[in-house]
Image (cartoon, rainbow, N blue to C red; front, side):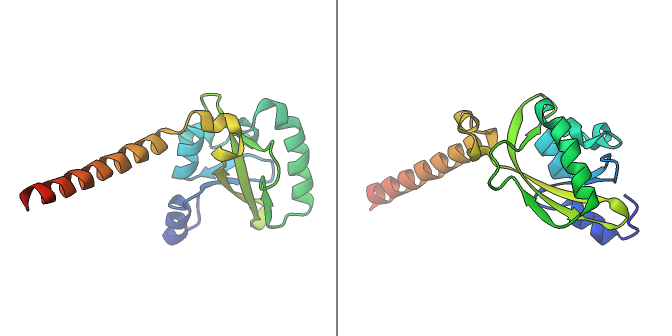
Length: 157
């Protein structure tokens, strides 16, 4: 990305959502760290590739059509809030329900913010992500420490 302004690069790189910039042909020109984590790709693997590599095969043709329509009348747009079939495709072949925000940029570029909506598909909640399990372990550990501290307080009184 050649913005010439390091502050903007830092802002995009550290955005809380996966951020992808594509050109007018739908070629990926930039992804941030969150996009790498969400889609399980290194940015070097995606830069220069068509955006459709991140979309399940069964939706690719219709996505190309939607992308062409968007290019004719670009505007700020939210997608996936009420659409159950909007999904992203990870490098390992797993799909996840997605919510996407589009922002048009100069010269035909588009900035897409992507969020996973793991609770949107029932099958997605059957196997919670590792971060959820780690959080549950931490909470259980803290609760056990609080109980142990309370017991110790009453024993030493």
